[in-house]
Amino acid sequence: MVHESKFKRLESVRDLVHEMLVTTENTSMKQEAWVHLSGVSNFASMLAMRREQDVEIAAIAGVLHGFYFYKTGIKDFPGPNSADAVRPIIRSTQLFTDEEQFVILRSIFYQEDRHQVHGPYKEIVKDAILLQMYLQNTGDNLSKAATHRLQNVFVELGISVEHVEAGFNVDTETINSNAEDRRLMLADFAEMFAGQNIIGVPEDERYREICKYWPDSDIYKVLEGNWCAAFVYYCCMQVGVLLPIRYPNCMYRLAGVGAWLDWAQLPETEFFYHDKQDGFEPAPGDIVVYEKLLSNDSHDHIGIVLGCDDNKILVAEGNKDNKNYSSVLYRDRGHCILGYIRIDNGYHFHFSGEYTPIR
Image (tube, rainbow, N blue to C red; front, side, top):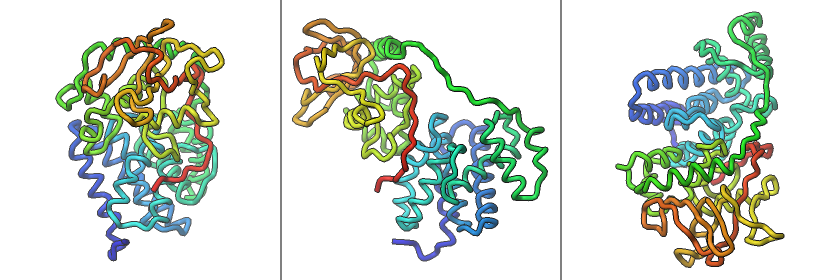
């Protein structure tokens, strides 16, 4: 159902963002967030008016574009993670048609993809972010593509492009070709972290750190007694194996075992191996996926391999045996193991497909 008072929708969304910011303890962060989000929203409105698009929809996408970062403090993947975080929120308001939700979420998702030209609202959000960065004088370096984009917007608005180069330090885009063995780093970190006997309750600060990647209000209830995959995700993020909270277009978030299995079997990854498949032997830093280990459900548990011999694997797990605490333990290699995920050391998340928000 679409609300009859259509032009009050922006106000309703701003109220939701304000409620989120109220819970932020850092006062300076709270102020920065409101200045930035309001600024991007206002610039999006202006650009939409100039480009003859829906001013309200553009403003809503603008005010929501940084939701995930200001909710969690996590800078990785602002587009995919914010789109995923606000999707259930805008759906629950019942203020938007399916088509409008689609436009808003895609505009948020593609906010950093400045190399390509997408639809009108996506371009509006990208340009509005750059305008706000310029006027807010963040001091952030801009890539060549972003600088060129900002110059084009200035021309569109009748402003001299000379200001762009004077206002920003332009950097060159480089790809980090770090050759470190991230799987060994993952094994070392997981062993240290799981060995701390983390308890899956909100009172445990280490558990809160795991859960912070999933900014839903009911996350502790959702993950209660079921946080083995969230533990794996946290460990990966700490050692530079960076992934959004949900791989685009996949059904489940990476807080669940099934999402890891789906991701590892994508054509662009192909990281999943059955035990002894083509001579495959598990090694430290591999991720083990169990099959009906603790229940009658498939792929019902997950952990990180620390070592292996012919008969056993040493693993680090969050939520050991669904008993709500982390542990380092041995598992029988021949019992209830579906297979292993071996992430290539050179892997970097890159999504070049067409993002379609899940319903």
